[in-house]
Length: 137
Image 1 (cartoon, rainbow, N blue to C red):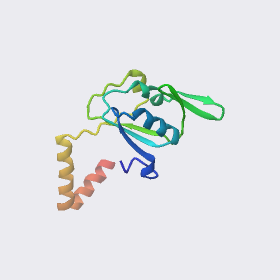
Image 2: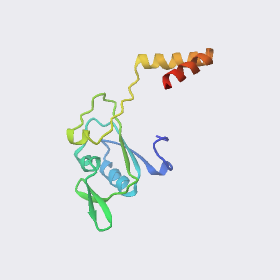
Image 3: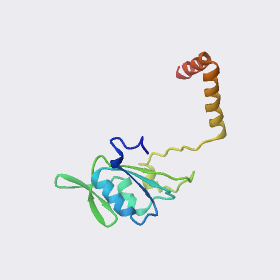
Image 4: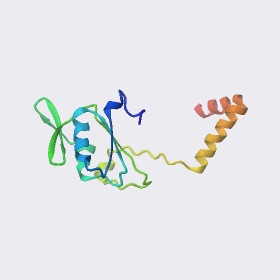
């Protein structure tokens, strides 16, 4: 979480998709340009559709977005991260084109490779430097 918020911890909000104050926290994050981490997301809730697709409208000198039944000022600093433990989340096609999906699943072979790299780096640093150089080229 510390790496996500660029400025300070005050600009970071964490909420679960099933929280009673979910809509309120979403509105405040959009309005004040906070980073919002939504945890335990199994599917994209309908309230998020306009925010995910950035369906912004111009009202005078400001941009607004529809959040549920409210029209909220949109701050350009707003960021949203959807976090799930589900390896295959249900993402509708209209949202899939604008969402960057990153899979942080840890596999046995991935862990073996990392541990082997650490052992080689500790035991034979020159060999690890050669490997890093070859992978860059």
